Length: 328
Ligand code: ASP
Image (cartoon, rainbow, N blue to C red; front, side):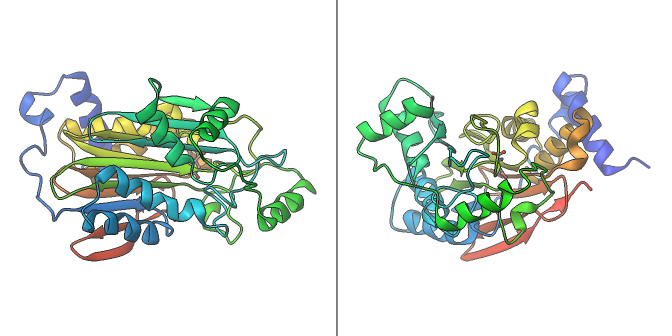
């Protein structure tokens, strides 16, 4: 009997190469079930209050880009959240450096990477998108741009994060642990949030302090459009969390959206993108990666390499935390 995982992988590879008959390549097309809109979906438990904030924007008549931006503001501004914005874990030299991206229904996108001192990097990313001819600004240049735009320079290293860093310095051993994002001391995590408004317009945002105690200058998947986040208003959107290097090497969020374009449901597409990591990157066994996705019909999905990934889904008046199925 064909194992389902293998079948998806085989069908996907063949379909992408165009060697399957058209009827099979468009597997799933037309079968998509229309779900209630609007819908908001986001990574991890901090997605619950973020979804609330995003839904409120939509309910108040705001735009879908405002919804995703305001949604991720919640963990960005939370000093207790060790994985995003203020209070995020520093790198191994004690600097809190942030990565963020945002993408809207018109295909426009903006990102910042290796940005210090700004509580809301997602809003700087939006400014890059709307007020510059560029897509990505990094480091000092991104900070200079943010300050010119009126953002306030702040110290993001909270006493709690500094204490954790000093504790880590005692051994200074960088040894990523699967799902350490769920540990009481959070080292590694991200909020990726996707929204489809009632008209079917799609947007997404992704923001993180990246890996705790990373090398100074390390940039993850989150600010790279196609890796940590991708939106295509004709299809849907996807975002990633976990070991950014695995997502970068497979251009994960773009892959999920392309799988959906080729007829997969969001759930199938997330599974196929995780399978790509399993097949291509031997280091996959050691790390976590989680994908979430939504299509224009409001169908959603989530899947991860390792058990332990969860995501928040706000649809039909309910905002719930769901445990994703995993490959291992
Ligand atoms: N993907 C992020 C990064 O690698 C971190 C995470 O989601 O845990 O920077």
